Amino acid sequence: MSSIAGWPRSGPAARLGFALVLSLCLGWLVAFAANFPALTGRVVDQAGIIPPQTRDSLESKLADLEARSGIQLVVATVKSLEGEEIEPYANALFRHWRLGEKAKNNGVLLLVAPNERRVRIEVGYGLEGTLTDALSSVIITNAIAPRFKAGDFAGGITGMLQGSQTPSSNFPGKDLGPEDDGIARYLPAGNIAQFQLHYVNLSTEPNLREGWVNLYKVDESAVKQRIQTVFLVGDVAVNIPPNTRETTTLTFEPKLTDETRVFQLAAHSHAHSESFTVWRLRGDEKELVYKSFNWSEPKVMTYNSVVQNPQIDEVAKADGGTSGVMTLMPGDKLMWSCDVNNTLNTAIHFANEAHTAEMCLLGGSYISDNPALMSGLCASGACNQGFPAGFAQNIDGR
Image (cartoon, rainbow, N blue to C red; front, side, top):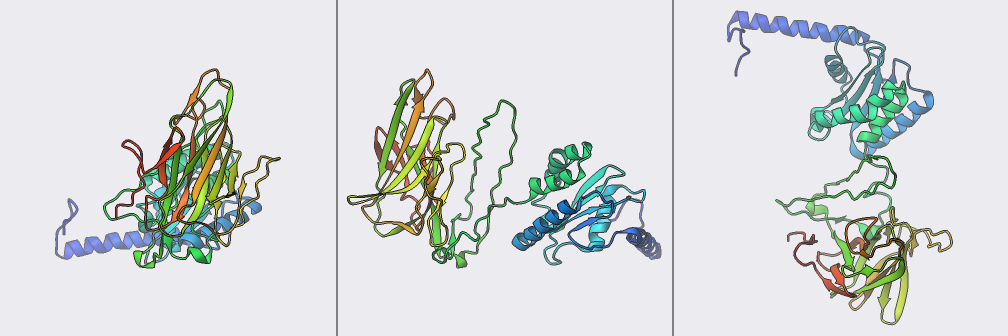
């Protein structure tokens, strides 16, 4: 064991020195603890800066966070730091309250000292890899400090939750039906999952929005069904003349050998697309299963025995789709179309540019052990299964 420079390595003097330091530390903690507020709930507002309505809302959100993740996050305000810096005070309060589960050390403390104009996020060891010092600094700088400087303490505190808490829309959750038992997406050992945020700022001012990806780890022994990706790109040969309306329609037949369940469908189009429609083709039958009118925020439809998707409203231009379990049989096809109104004085072609190009991409997911059944690229009205070089692939590595 290495020793601190200047300290004896062994002997009575060393033991005496250690005992003296330990005594001083314990005395310091006891002195602190004498003035610590009592842990009366998930929100302890000793400084009296949080309105009752905000406090009740925070209590509810923090209880929900703990129920879903096991993380115990407590918000505390104090009248005074007793002449100490906020870092040791927060650490001592965190330990005094014993936040988080003992085995996981997964507590978080947001401490606000309004009189000293100081704020700190204290994190248990079990979460230091997730809520790092760097991330805590970003949350304080961007979500908390600006509100505090404006005198809005309640807004700054709730801003911390918006900056660090998981979104209100979670998966898995209440949207799963009995037929969805044990579903998961497979990531083989040694592989990397890459996520992209595709965000379009429709305003004339800079606009920063947060993007979140929730990952739920499931032991492979619990996996009964695998989620794969629907990713059908069309049409790379589209070239819509200036000031022209044109509907692009694509048809894709997956190479199925068994009945396959479609779990979700979602549209991806650009600013000049006025509607995006999807049908299931089975023999001579053509069933409308999805339609979106909102290119910037299209709704995702889930097909199982629990979710009731909204009905399509052509008059109000409201997204919708059929409800219930949706399957594809061998020989079935997916057809989708984009109604594009090119109001530009230049032609529109296929490209990843929201306002000067177009997109007619059908996304979603299906349940199968085969990861490449519903990935394809369409050009000049014809769709091929799989992707050419240069396009992202939907391969799970098995």
